[in-house]
Length: 255
Image (cartoon, rainbow, N blue to C red; front, side, top):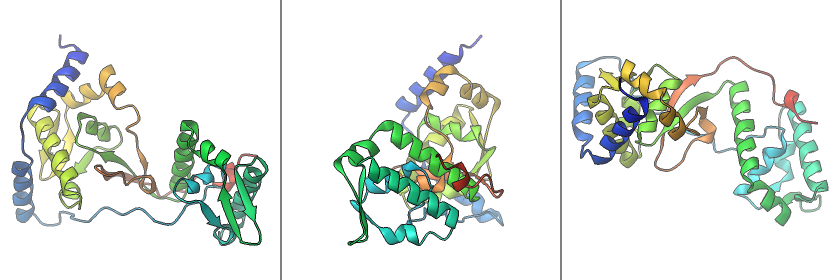
């Protein structure tokens, strides 16, 4: 019987030692694409550059990239329920010394105490969860970020197939080459099938997903909202588009 941990170890070793080139796979896919009709070559959606309020204390994540926030940002929130929730949270943050609110300059500024607070791992994790909830409730796109490692197989925990045209057309060519090379090796090892540029997982691949070592290695490689994507060297690929509204953010506002 083939030990599941041995399967994982052998896969990792092959990916480390195999000298492989993605060019052959790209050429193959492009050849197929020229022979086919109707294959989507649509670029993946880009993240919205505007700040997304959640109505939770984790909206302080704004200050991870900014020293101050115009009060008008909050006043311009169209949803009154959400706006009130945001105001409540920023007032609480001011009372606890995490921010200062200056009505003369019409600005909210982060304090040293606030800076330490938003750098806490627990805060960052909570901020990601809150933003994901908003993305889902608003019917946004969810997906997984690929980086060219064996853990990219984790994609198939959330979707049945992947169109490699979305990888090939991505502007980060270096990341695309790495990911395609990785899929080439996984195909050679029998963990995936590639048919007309569409990748699907095999029974052997599913067995690998269920090994304890793979689960440990892919811990943290989870489905996320498109708004949370954009890490250099990784490519976001869609797993699903949520269209049904869930409980509103303001309704989950923590009192």
